[in-house]
Image 1 (cartoon, rainbow, N blue to C red):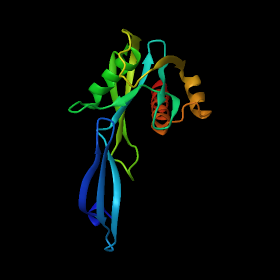
Image 2 (cartoon, rainbow, N blue to C red; image 1 turned 135 degrees about the horizontal axis):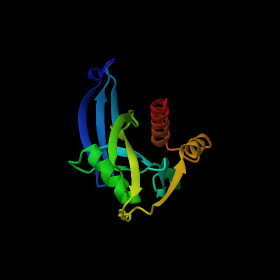
Image 3 (cartoon, one colour; image 1 turned 45 degrees about the vertical axis):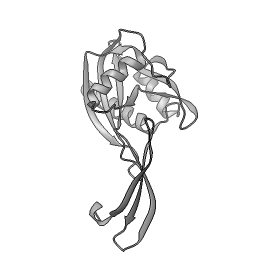
Length: 184
């Protein structure tokens, strides 16, 4: 079965704001069944930055996430602005959220976040030789505390569930696997 087997017969936006764009589709399935009120959250996507310092420590951020209603420990990340390229978002978000800049910003891969009800894609970047160069420049909804951990401690934070956002867990495993392969 391909996407051509699903036919959108009607579509409208029920929410179109800075924080959320929600589309309501009516879909005809291959067997002729009609699915009304199929909601899709649209997004320009976001970036996740695995920033490693010159001392081989990883930059983490702790902040409140209103959707889940709790404080999370994660890698620096943020939404792609209109017309912005993901790599530019990665550079901007690392600097704004943490005050760090990097000597290089390398795209590693993208993740599909929630394909059933969203078109969101997360883009993972590796920021090598990151160093603290400025103050944070936070959005009105952000209160971010930064910390540094070594790779072994980072892996333990994933294993024990301290870091539990799935896109960040996947990103950490991807980067640690890459760094291990590079080290031989």
